[in-house]
Amino acid sequence: MSEKRESLNFLEQIIEEDLKNGKYTSIQTRFPPEPNGYLHIGHTKAIWVNFTIAQKYGGKTNLRFDDTNPSTEETIFVENIQKDIKWLGYEWDNLFFASDYFEQLYNFAEQLIIKGFAYVDDLTSEEIAELKGTPTSPGKNSPYRERTVDENLAIFRDMRAGKYKDGEKVLRAKIDMGHTNMLMRDPLLYRIKHQHHHKTGDTWCIYPMYDFAHGQSDSIEEITHSMCSLEFIHHRPLYNWFIEKLGIYPSKQREFARMNVSYMITSKRKLKKLVENGIVTGWDDPRMPTVAGMRRRGYPASGIRLFCEKTGIAKRNNLQEIALLEACIKEELNKTCHRMMVVNDPVKLTIKNYPEQTHETLSAINNPENESDGERELIFSKHLYIERADFMEDAPKKFFRLSPGRNVRLKNAYIIHCESFVKNDEGQIEEIICSYYPDSKSGSDTSGVKAKGTLHWVSQEHAIPCTIREYDRLFKTEAPGTTEGVDFLDEVNEKSLVINKKAYMEPALHTYPKGETVQFMRIGYFRIDEDSTNDEFIFNRTVLLRDSWKKG
Image (cartoon, rainbow, N blue to C red; front, side):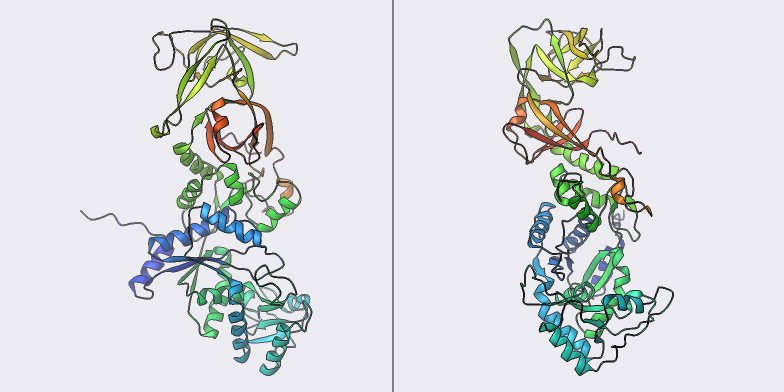
């Protein structure tokens, strides 16, 4: 019987072919984020691709910060990116910065000048754009394109020495202003920026452009497979052109579909706008698609990795359903989370035949998926809270919760029978009066009484007030920011956060640490937020047990 052959994605097929043909003896990948913001759900796919493929083939992965733009990059972003990658479960083999190679990149630029493949241009950015042409019409050469090698070298060295102002001159590659790929029409290599760099300080006042730094950094590190998302496919000819003209290690770029998720935005510029406009509280707001935001919301790293695995590696961009992401999160949380009782919208319930001024201790299994998590104590008494939605004055036949004349089981406790109810002056249910069957205790029920439904509850006397931040999707539309003429800020879901301050939790939860995620029985998963104090427990809603979202 033949062994079942493993199904390989197209990147793995390329790598296996390269190894088989002896092109490489080992695999070296890299993840190269720019430290100008926080990592988001889109980055998690690139991280997963580069780290897991390297691991599979016994290779290594570098973390390299693409820090070539001092005006947008900060040390805080460097630190948070490292934190996020480690939290996702990955360890890089080497930590590098593109700024580590500034001297070497500068020397590469001089080599291109000497070989006649680069020149200094005095045109403004607007004038360069005017001469660039369009996708259907060729561009025009700059009047400075034919400067001599000596002249270009002298001016470029003066640029480095700080003799010119920002924007006064740039270094461009000399390729082809009629090329069908607009990126090949004499792209910029260096620009002048008299700005402090987070790592190199004020040593440099000229900085390489992304396209010039990226491929050469890969080459310096001898990256065998430079795997990036599909928006960089048009950059590949330029990536190869620089390597070829410099005669350096031939790293190879390969592109895969980027991670686009419905109801989410993965543009750093737009995410920054959400923060700056106060629509969210920060980069780690639990509604944000950032790794920091997802962590604070209660998404486990294993759930995000599972989502990356299930969506796979494709050659074409597509929109992944957020429902699949949430299903992955629930699948992982179900394995680890304790089942706790919290009442979101409480109504009083009194058991008239239960003894006054007494209570009893019951036991509850913390997690039926993991017996080793043990049990905890519950306190049961005459006066309880249940969910207001679990009672109906005049219930339909298939309503298996509480209603006059019906039985229901209280989780881990007794079966109760609804006798009557009390309304306040506004006509709202204020109190539900029940009786209980003393011999119907969970685990030792000898009553013979039947109950179709089971409700969660908390003891009024012992319950602890808590605050619940009920987070929902940040946007109302499936693909925010993609409709022409519509500002993505107008697509924000104004009900993406509702703060509930009337909830009550069982007392055992008070011992749980900040950052712990638990399941509220019958409701969903919730994480204890860092803003919690001894006086106020705050929960962030991670995901509901059932998807209640309705498209607008």
